[in-house]
Amino acid sequence: MKLAEVVEQLDLDVKTGSERLDTVVTRGYASDLLSDVMGNALEGDLWVTLQTHQNIVAVAVMKSISGVILVNGRVPQEETVQKAVSEKIPIMVSNMPAFELIGRLFQLGISGK
Image (cartoon, rainbow, N blue to C red; front, side):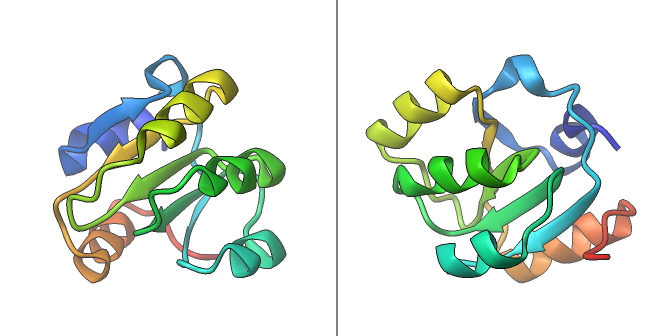
């Protein structure tokens, strides 16, 4: 499934990386610990987190993450937006809590395996 389909199906607000919405999502990963994502996320994962600081962009680049979804209506910090734009990392925002969003992603066929 492509990021554009996820955005449309879940009514996500795209903050950065709209030029990369044709990226294919291979699976999902949810964590708020950067070290956990660095150790366990795989290339192409769609990362669900509540973190808004610019280090999420560095981790997304390092792991070749397809995109980052911020939950609970959290908005990326300005430095995060600037870094994501320069690195071409899609950051999207959902008003849903993480539990609901992850369930909806699973219904769309995106699993953690």
